[in-house]
Length: 252
Image 1 (cartoon, rainbow, N blue to C red):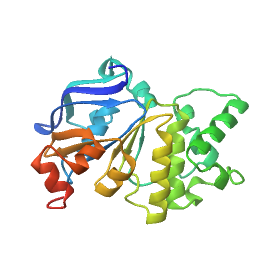
Image 2 (image 1 turned 90 degrees about the horizontal axis):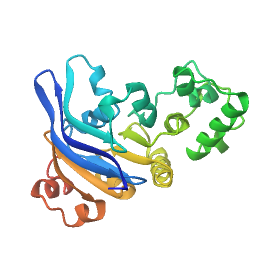
Image 3 (image 1 turned 180 degrees about the vertical axis):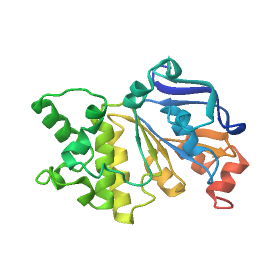
């Protein structure tokens, strides 16, 4: 179990009485990319929102079962700490519109009232933007608004903002669905390079993308985890007929 960074045990999620995730037990390996796939409405986004305790922010939303980060039950941790350890990047790029590129990167420290020296701020910003493959493009315009950047650059800025908090894990929810093919390719390259420093879970409806970037794949259907395994095996010899039908485009 030493390489397992995150695991769920009989995890169910509810909106009111409706069970949208059904007793999911799964383990995620450290420094790997895991794709979470499945048709619309199957519970992919709800699953990752339970992992950083955002699901519970929705009125009437609850969970049962357990989620462990490095063997620690996240329900016993301060939710703010959970979200520092488990960063999240959303479907549409969302840099804070009133903030500069520089301020966006260190926004998490400000929001958490963590004071930094000027040198610390400069180091974190440069390091995070380099990790997000954005530094060379923005180093001379750090004090311009983040919204000035292109869509692909904005999404890399959001990834830099998540990386700045030095998380154990980053959750990416359809991070390229609002981007053009060129920007999508740069984000995919970035995901592959980042797994040396951080574990990544990516929700995607794009099977080709999952095949390109992930080491492992989870296939969900109607709130259930139907199949989980290495991406290579799942895309060549899936165990479940439903997985095979999804991957061959029979539904989606």
